[in-house]
Structure formats: C-alpha cells, structure tokens
Length: 307
Image 1 (cartoon, rainbow, N blue to C red):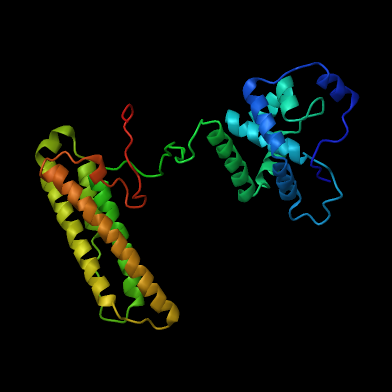
Image 2: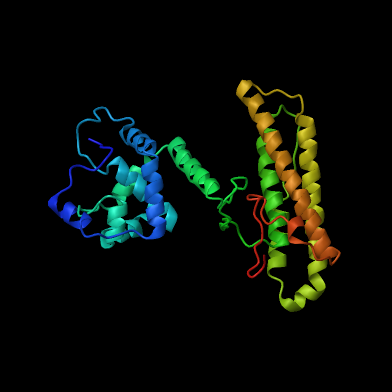
C-alpha cells in the first residue's frame, strides 16, 4: 500500500530526529515550501497508485512524501539516480530532508520506477509552485523561461561537398524509382548513381598535389550531374500530378513519394549551391548557409571555443 506519509517512526528514527541536526538554508527553505503545499503530496500519491488494481494491498514501497522530496532533491542537485541513492544513504541531513531518517534507502531502480509514475500535470504543478515562490521573493519575474541548450551530436558522416552531392543523387534516384513504379506506364527516370559514385570516389582519392589541378574540374562534373538528376526528378514530380494508381493505396503512395522527392530536391539545391560557391567560385560560405546532411538537415556546426 502506498502511503502519503511515512509510517510510525521507529526508536532509531526518534533518536535521529532528537539529535538537533538542522538542514542548510536551501534545503530548509525547500522543505518549508513543500510542507506549505501539502496538496502536492496527495497528487504524487494518486500518481503512484494510478492503474493499480488493489492499491490498498501489496508492498508499500516509497511513500508519496519520500518520492516528492527525492524527486525535488534530484532536480536541485542534478544527480543521476545512482548518485541520488548514495548521497541520501550517506548523508544525515539528506535522510532527514527526504524523510527516510534511519530507514533503509532503496536501490536506484526503485527511485526510477516511482519517478516514472509521476504524470506531467504533477510535475507542472511543482514547477508552478516554485515559480510563484520565486516571484513572491522577487528572485524571478516569471516572464522568461530558461531552457537547456546542451547540444547533441547527430549521427552523420563527415560532411564534404562531394559526399553530400553523392547522397543527394542516390537518395533522389531511389525515391524517384519508387515513385515511377507506382505510376502508370510511360514515365522514365535515368539512373546515374554509378557515375555519381565514381566522381565522388575520384574526389575522395585525390592527393594534395592532384587537388590543385583536378579538384575544380571534377567538382564541376559532379555538380552538373547532380543538377541534371534534380531536374529529371522534378519532371517526374510534374508528370505524377493528377495521376492515380492501380488502387487507393497506390494513389496515397504516389502523393507521399512526390512530397518526399520534392523535399530531397530542395535539399539538393542547397547542396549544389554551397558546393558551387565554395569550390567553383572560391567563396567562404558561412555556416548558417550550409547544409551538413540531407538526412539530418537540422544539424549545425558547433566550433569549439566559439559562442
């Protein structure tokens, strides 16, 4: 059974509480704030028993007070679950704050299961109470929202112009062939993937001495080839407008493949533009104008040491 409060304290709990140990200022203020809003504990208890067939029976587990205070402590200290458990186990003040006192602290997976049962409205209620308290104390005005700006590495290959052009050709060709198969007879799309792959590999294998004389002509051929593939793909899209497939499913797939093909064609236009500007015209293209992957187009380049 999930309780709202801890069970009757044991002799060890009473002895620990009688030691006169005080919390530091931050934890004491947070503790007083949670005590002031007892409705949060009841909301947490309802989340913990949500979906249980017989909430009045079974193992007790963490009570609502312990879950709320442990969840708050984890958010304040930014600890992972293992460190949270170790800190509470080793710290007398943290045992008092989380109301474990002298009782055994469960393993980290017990915290994980309890935290996962908290619903978004409950977490939002906790955040709103914190914001209101900050406004009352003139710490915040509650008009701005701070968000985490940690960047995450995307799963892409190293973005060279030649490989991006090759990606554009092969993906557009693959999508166009899927679209052509669903269209009635008479629509043709030429496959230039072998030629584009050969051009890309030639550029990848150039030595520093060869790049001085051969890089620009080879890039010019690859850019021209990619542009021809994009133009042919857009012609297929134009021919597919208004066409119906053999059945309802084919008609839906025609529309879906057309939208997907147009998406990759627009990305290929950006790849062609940046390759032409950088390689053929010798322009230093700024990062905000570049595309680093046609599969993860949101990817941005973060330079170490730069804002």
